Image (cartoon, one colour):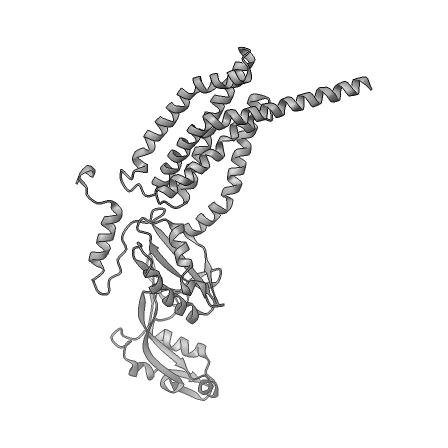
Length: 409
């Protein structure tokens, strides 16, 4: 179907698919891809496997109650049937049988020897492993397994006399992270932001009262988001410093570049207000939008301040006349930049297009910051310019006075 004829967005279609397939018994359904911002992985790790599984089992139903999310799956949900034996260690010790002897007997009967120890048939061009084990039809017969013999100190002993053997189930695989067992609970975000869902999950009772043996480990996109926001302030500071250094080299002045950078706080306020009005969270795309905004807003201020300095230097205008002339003649290119950038990002900010959920916060931040900085820069930047110029004249006056005092002395 052509895109302009579609009635529903991708997020709505995925949610309808989940609702339609949720009634199928015994089926695990994953809707959506593995792209950025589509899934939140909550990783729990610990040494005690039983406590870890109980914690994950208690947390999973609480996560399902979060509003607006998709499916919640656990890495422990897949169980496979297995033969489980709980040895009587006191009885085995009396007979001189170790737990390793019991495990080797069960393994040889049901699985066979390890590949490294298997006998081999040498053919002309290859080797064939020889694996000896019980018939597949007999492996599920507990009576036959109970009769398997284990060699002890005083002869062979039946497995049935060494403990309790029963059919059970266990995890299909055991994952480890830094030598700790871990369980991953995956949440389909269904269009919601990762940080917002994680904040709500952190308020759940199980997350607030994790056992001492279990800890939360940040992995995947959650780890990337934490690292990003942790270094965001440093990145912004480095960016502002680099801009300031370039401006100092261009203007040969240490004070006037501060006038240009005064537009950055004006744009930041507009960007955050725009997110609040559009009911969007401060996420990774918002950070990217702020970094884009820094360059655009700085360029607009450069146009204004550079012309004011040039008018005073080349045309001999006074400070007030130079600022008025700069605002009058530089307003047009500043407005053209704002209109062009805003018009280009308006479809994304309005949610038009194929799944704009990731790019929409970035567009809203840029448009909101540009609007406020454009309106306020023509008012605030000239005022800051006058204060900085007064400070510069004061420093020059003090330098002349000190030089005159030093010469007369």
